Image 1 (cartoon, rainbow, N blue to C red):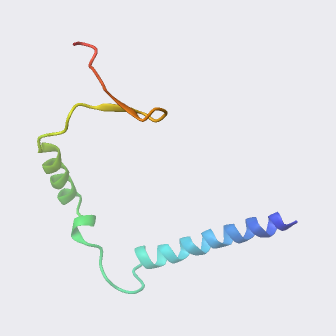
Image 2 (cartoon, helix red, strand yellow; image 1 turned 90 degrees about the vertical axis):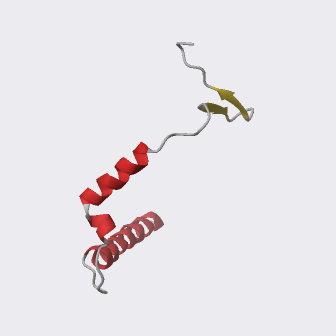
Length: 79
């Protein structure tokens, strides 16, 4: 019997949270604008291209064994 109240309360709280999030973030009821860095797809692509162009300076990839907490360097199959 208590399960229906719990499930109803959870569903209601999720619905209320969704309505508040939608109205504050998307409809901007308190004013404000979306930053250009978020809304401009061209800016996003240029930034992503810049980050992909940076050289990688990391070491070789490792696999961690969570049981024994030992790390093993992954060797490629062609070597």
